[in-house]
Image (cartoon, rainbow, N blue to C red; front, side, top):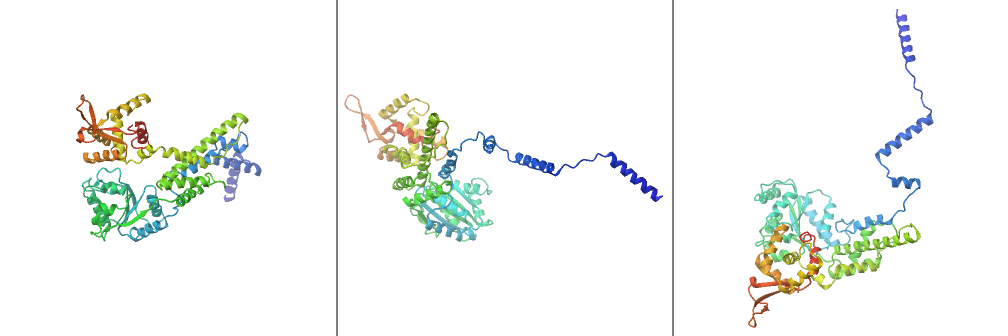
Length: 487
């Protein structure tokens, strides 16, 4: 029986195998080709190939590579918002900031530092770079104080940047104190343009520096502004309260500094041995900028605009060559002294343009109010603009109306609180001293009822007219990003 059952089972298995189709194994070369095809299909789905790359790979219809694409990286590193690849120079300033970080926030302690210097001297960039290079990990936030309309809003702005909870605007100070004394670790707060928090009694600034100087504090505070004597002039009681910050000043960049920084940025994206910007052109840019302000941002703008001008010039020449001799490789743009000189001339402009660009933001708001009241803020054409400019220059606008329009513009912007009437009159007087406007009082004369201009009288009786062309003022105002939409 067992032998018969085994024989029957074997027969069934053989029958099943006979009914099942046997798949033939392909030859080895066919199997290898199939595997390659499957792998190619997988790569093609993962990395799609464009038409241009296919044409280049086949050698058919491949376009000549344009050197313009290499300029994208160069123009990017020459932009203001691009972080520098490394901090060039500023060895003493870097050492002071590094020591401050090591003795305060890296050890879980509080402290304060005030960094001063002209715009474009690398204050914020140097600080942020050293924070990234720090060996310790700690929270750090940057708060721009310019948009704050009241100094008390600084407490809430710091807490919002740290994603900390607090009970409304009135409880912002209490929430910051809890974070400073009962938090889980030290944190760094950078107040950029800290002079915007100046008020009548400077209570907010005094309180912030006191919090940072407390023995149990976990707040490392860094204030950044342009004024060198801010703490001595506006915060004289810091020394008496034993909470005076460490002072660090950034001097304007010199010629060698600007050349080294620009060259470092260009070298970080250089693809050829021949420089994109000639060395003599870089030195010209550095000398002109160092002689005026030492602002590195202006040097970056000059080089970037000169690069764009050289690129446009090469494109124009390439189109002319294509029309005469057929398609050819585009020439490689190079920035020469001529390009830099043209950009410097256009940026600096006339002495009037320099005078208008040197006005502060509040003074530009006054001029913006004048343009608005003169009826030339909008879509008026050149003829209407010239007529309006001539009319406003002769008749003038009452100072009281100008102050009211100034308040409306401030409310529309929502960036700054309008100054008081007395401060407004000081702004007008300052612009009169600078030769931008003329303030006069028109009173009835004795001869024939004519009106005689006088520089005396009440503020409400005074009128203001422009001492420069209104078209120049409009160009200066349009160059300010915040005021462009209003005009």
